[in-house]
Image 1 (cartoon, helix red, strand yellow):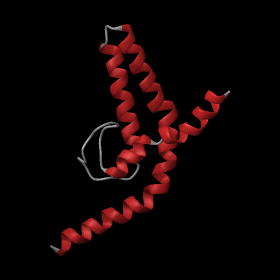
Image 2 (cartoon, helix red, strand yellow):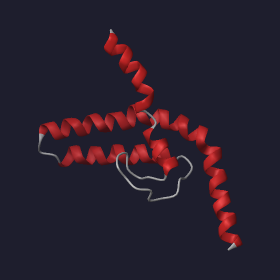
Image 3 (spheres, one colour):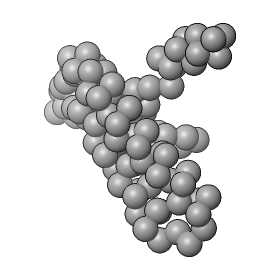
Image 4 (spheres, one colour):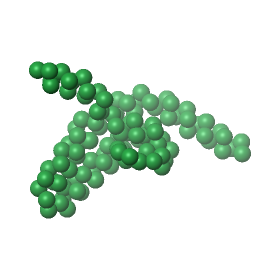
Length: 110
């Protein structure tokens, strides 16, 4: 029972990765540098791309354990993280739009 409560308490920390990485300007879920500008609904785009990468990994894998872990990751990105990233993307949309407009104004002033 304690494990269930710990899992429920930790779950919010493990979701919405696509949105978090979009706001940070990063393309990959783990250990990546800032490599792009945040964009509207980029969290959803990240999750779809990451799930697709894992599905391709399953298709080319000959190792059962690798295919299993890739399937689990694809399911996580597509079924768990994607809906929560959709909510996060809607919440962060005003900030993303404001930042992108500020950058355009700065470029025009130069």
